[in-house]
Length: 524
Image 1 (spheres, rainbow, N blue to C red):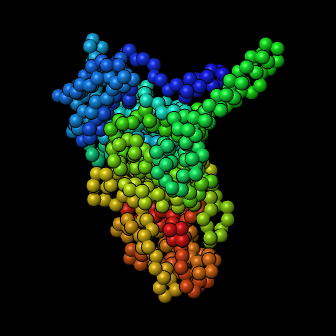
Image 2 (image 1 turned 45 degrees about the vertical axis):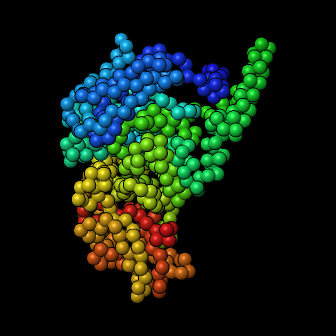
Image 3 (image 1 turned 180 degrees about the vertical axis):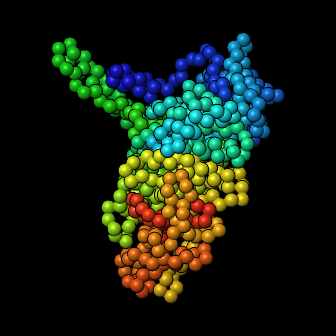
């Protein structure tokens, strides 16, 4: 098995010559019951025998092209308005016909990340009750098979399914609640594409273009990404050296087996196919979707990158910009989930900035990337489980971001986000975006809205002076501002809020019920 795997890498990498394609086929996520993205040009692509004429028809549209020398073809249908009426997408070449039936037009979202995005509706806190009522012909689900690949894949075995108890049971709970909320507000068909894999870091989901786009990742790009590509001199030398090792191993292994002894361990291929390798999940699970027209993406990941701390923001920037560059649909909306509270905070020190606190801070700082939004969920976690069962609030908060940011609804869609701090009279006056109708302290339980508490109940607030020594702070709410002070700090210059593994107890919210993001004013 390992030998065949190594030889396949040798053949693919050295020659990169596609096999002749005779049959007419669609290569992207096209199948019965699919959803086309409304109001955007619609790429349709596939493979056929080189030179053959291809005609693509959808509704009143019909477009013709020819298959290229390598057998690939693509057309772009004109934008279509939303439609609940099922139609047929037909692809014809001579006597060959591929028909995709019951196609709707609405909004399509890619839903990606690690296990909390993958977490199925059946295991959500209210999942069984929701599943029992799940019957919706205008919401369609596509589950991307888990596949790591050394090089970008161009095809996918797509199978869209309308929402039914049997189709939604194992589908992403976060994605389902997100899509359900959008549909209730927008009354258009919704297509959800789940491309998630538990336990995975962000690096395998990031394409080479993304790594290259971020200056802080330039060393990693040179060391890990360039050598993966045999089309450049560095990559060519790296691959050829690896194949030399494999060829020597083949000879040694044959000799060992002929002599009746165990063969030596096989060398690794130049680019292993597993879910931990940089770009591997992009290659296997995201690239096959491109350039399928989408509305945007939602993302829930970060647990596997806890060691990156503040550097995670650079990885987020690379992921988002890389996907957008390859999709070629502009800066489409990218909404993501800040990590939930989990485990216990190891110390009770006011300096905080421990555990996932720094990852959450990196996620907050990632909002600097254009057209992004962050759902804060430090009030729905579980001290003993990395997979919070309350996925409904997560999906709803993501949907609120989309409804306000992408669809222009006049609503508060986020908790308060730190904007600025001012020192005056021995106190810090902190201002925020997304205050809504006012700040409050609250305590949340289950799926219920947070219940207001006195601000003195919020423990996770601290200040420091110019000496850099941190002390717990007294807090007041004055209009839209949070006012912090400490008798131990004559002239405070910096503040932190909830930058710990698990900020338990009462937290800060706006009165619309969205939690304030943890923040540290000294990491700007």
